[in-house]
Image 1 (tube, rainbow, N blue to C red):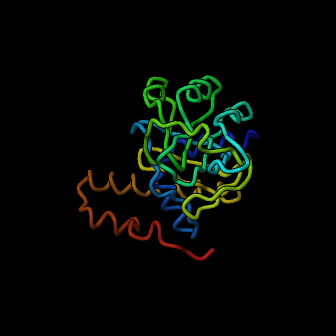
Image 2 (tube, rainbow, N blue to C red; image 1 turned 90 degrees about the vertical axis):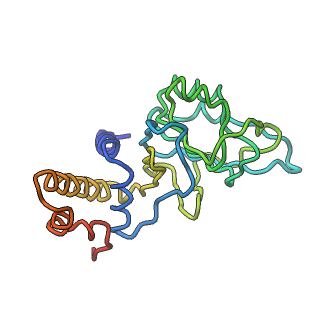
Length: 222
């Protein structure tokens, strides 16, 4: 990543996904990855996506999971598409230990993980559709690394910025990341102004009307 990209990631990391989601709504971009949740509410992951896709084992032969980890740059958020399967896992304790040691920002799985205790002990951010103990070895095979994937109809390309926290996971297209971040920061300032006004004695209705709360996420002409 360039210095500018690092600064943008730092700015996004300071923002809740709620503000980023509202910013995406304002400019008409779908980016919310429905159904993905953190293992712990204090987990947060922000960074460029490193994309991985699995498929079921077929006549092409048996598969394995995790060897791609050697190719992931530090600061990346690994995004794994296992077609939303919840019956086999594609992430476990060894991968958590290695990813944490190598400075990877976190992992998002369209599927499930296992060895949850390792993630919690290492404070390594994991976001998934759940947890299950059965391995994906010999059940799934790695079919793509560093190619576009689609999760819940949202395309995620290598370098798409991922923002994830206790409220869920968002994908922000790289080309729109600066704009989305600026709008998100503005939304955060407005909401802070509303809270300050209410604490100072304003009614909530008056404060929201004054600062345009109900229009924060409304799509606007470019």
